[in-house]
Length: 188
Picture 1 (cartoon, helix red, strand yellow):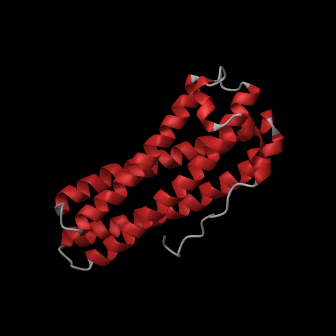
Picture 2: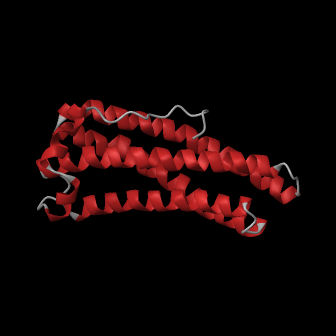
């Protein structure tokens, strides 16, 4: 992971996992309070995991010579742009709508929601860096400048940072939010 990014590596505090003990992940789909809105939210998280992994693999294939420059640029613009735009929209909605709803239902978990909001700030920094690096890499590739390999190495490192941050953040977010939803029968 790139040392340029300050990302959380510690676990969610134990007191933020109290409801998870009552509502373990493997029991969620069978719970009467597990509704379509929650399934869709978790589905968006799965999509973010898949796309971030694909963005990493696309960069690796290009660096290994398995993708042409034109093919790679098209994939980077489509998949990278989609990932960034959808993450910004998703996290904005969570910060302004979803997290306040969870806080209102059970303020015991506000400290956990603050940790998740800080993750969003940190992720935004990584996404901005990814966008800037991708734009430089594309310009170098299109100009035929061999310096694009250095930029692509940095882009790959930044894509790995996005993937790592999402793995930790999304799991923590799910394991905080879904038990609150189930416990208080929200979003039905």
